[in-house]
Structure formats: C-alpha cells, structure tokens
Image (cartoon, rainbow, N blue to C red; front, side, top):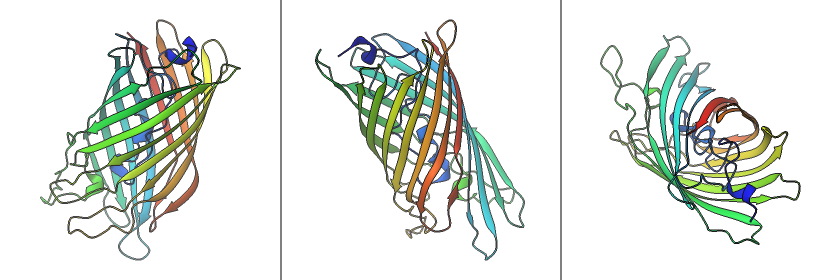
Length: 301
C-alpha cells in the first residue's frame, strides 16, 4: 500500500458513504459525516487532529393537506467538526450542528426555528493494509444523539409539527463499509455502502431507516488542489407518525451527482466546496428536493 493512500490529503476531503436521509431534519447528513479528512477509507495518523466548520443549505417541498396548497421546508446548517487519529487504524469523529429552519405553508404565516441540533459521535476503523494491497478497507460507526430540541411549541402552546423541530428526538445508529483504491496516475476511486437505523422519539414518531450508497473518483488537479466526482444515493423507508401510521409523503429512492473541489491553504488550512445535483428521483408521495450546497474551512492541528 503506497503511503499516499494511507495519509490524509491536505487534511480535507469529501467522503460519501453517509447520504441524505428520508426527512428534512436529517436529510443533509451526507454533506457532513467524515468530510474533513481524506477521501474514502483513509484515516488520520496517530495523534493527528483536524477541526473545521461548514455551511450547508437546501430546500424541500411537498403538497399540503388541502388541494392546491404547498408546504416548503428550507434549512441551513452550520456544522462544527473534529476528527482525531486515536492510532494508525482508529479515527474518532464528532459533529455539532447549529440549525436554522423555515417552514412555509400556503395561506399561513411562516414558522422559523433555530438551535443546536443532534450531535453525532463516530469512529472509523481501517483494516491494516499489507504492502501489496490494492484496496484500502474501512468500517464506519456513528451514533446520533437526541440533543436537538424536539418539543418546540408555537405561540399558542401547541407543539410544532415534526419537520419544524430542530432535532429528531431519537437516538440513531449508523454502520458502513468503504473501500478506496489508488490508480497508477495517483487518482483515487472509492465506494461505500451504509445503513442508518432510526429510533423512535417521545412523541412516537420514527423516521424511516435508510440505506446509502456511494461511488466516487478523486483527481489531483495540482499539488494543492483536487476535484472529486461522486454518485450518492439513498433508499429510505416511510416515516412512522405518532399514531403508528405511515407518512405517505416520506421515503423513496433519491440520487445526487456531487461535484467537489478541495484546496490546501497556508498554515495547514483547507477549503472544500461541494454541490450535490439531483439526477434521479423516485420519492413517495409529492416530495420535491433541491440540490445541496456545502462550503467548509478546516485546519489540521
């Protein structure tokens, strides 16, 4: 295994085994996850630490309960990341989001909420490679905690609907596998598959479980920059509402084509820009989702 495949590339990158989820409050998970270290299966060296902040924005809408009406969900999020190399095979991860949400409904006043969202703690285990291995393999584990507010009420004292809450109110677990291979040109190809099992919150609402898949290619454009092209997709089950019935406007199959550019800056800083463009949709009900724009700045300590 060449050293370049095992070491972080300028301390920044984009990885895609964690994809968009089935509902607004969790559907931008893919844009973050392990996005501040190198591509695919790579991990930080022992004692290495990377911190960063990123911004993501997206929009989703669907038909309202009354004919001719529309519900729109706009969300922006600032995420604070930290990755730490525990040793040459284990890397620990943490993500703390600050969320802004705006719900608009035809004929009604918009609802705005904001606050610290659900914190995610994770770990990556890299299978120890041999010198002649052509593929680097890693397993990834994530635990999302119900730290975001899930009982926000309106001025009249009624609990806001689920997608206006800052957090899901549930504890969720994700596990995935990712593989990376280095080509003779020095470019990288990587692929991943993962699943997220969502818990039930106090109100009895449960977001549908999700399977994510990813295929990507990283091209070194210069000594300090690289382009990444990815296909990211998800299969999501329907949500279970408070009374146990299925939400017909949730879940389905959705895929993005993702374009990223990563640039090393002075003093161990890095810059990442990503846009995920929807290329196919097979969503249940009347859901419509926009692309996702992500910008991030990171520093290797």
